[in-house]
Every structure is written in structure tokens, then in C-alpha cells.
Image (cartoon, rainbow, N blue to C red):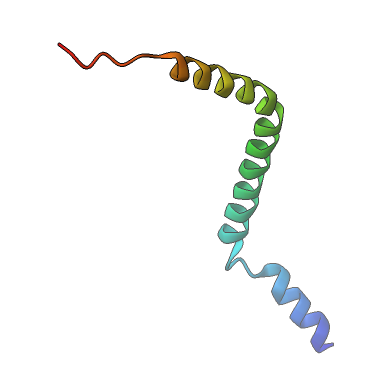
Length: 64
């Protein structure tokens, strides 16, 4: 009987519920960001290559 009473109190207890909500929300956001980054990975590499190419070909004018 003590185990059933303990389980009943555990189910009714609300302390820590906000923490669980935040952990689930944070995990969801992290998961969505990971999925978005995986989808944009190829595009970001090509953008990085183009920026690198433009910076390598750029000349700096030191006289005013």
C-alpha cells in the first residue's frame, strides 16, 4: 500500500513541472536548429567559398 500512496503523491506533485517544460522546449529548439543547419549545410559551404574567393581577389588601397 505504501508504494501506491507514494506513486499517487508523485503524480499529484507539481514541483519541477516548469523545469521539465523548459527542458522539453529547449530540446525542441535545439532539434529544430540542428535540422535547419543540416538542410542548409551545402548552401552555406558554397556561400563561404564565394566569400573566400572574393576576399582573396580583393585589393586594398592604402593611399587616400
